[in-house]
Picture 1 (cartoon, rainbow, N blue to C red):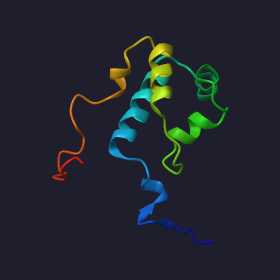
Picture 2 (tube, helix red, strand yellow):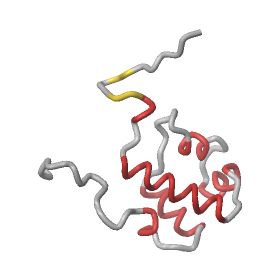
Picture 3 (cartoon, one colour):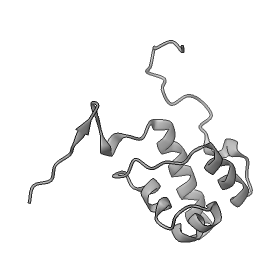
Picture 4 (cartoon, rainbow, N blue to C red):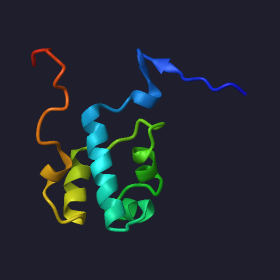
Length: 99
């Protein structure tokens, strides 16, 4: 059976996460694995559904962490919310001015 990659509004579902969102997800995943916490255990601690962490960590799902999640992740991993953000912009190639 052939696989189809559907595109909505010019963005494929597989690439619907921005560079900054992927950075946050990878940082949270690294901390989770370092602490030997399962996706299910982290979901419980965050107060989200059992499958949410798996969806966030999957490139096939548009699910991602929001600022409240980042704040709770910082508390869980005993660090600053700043730990989930890069030191500088990830959009260095962009020359678009801010609104």
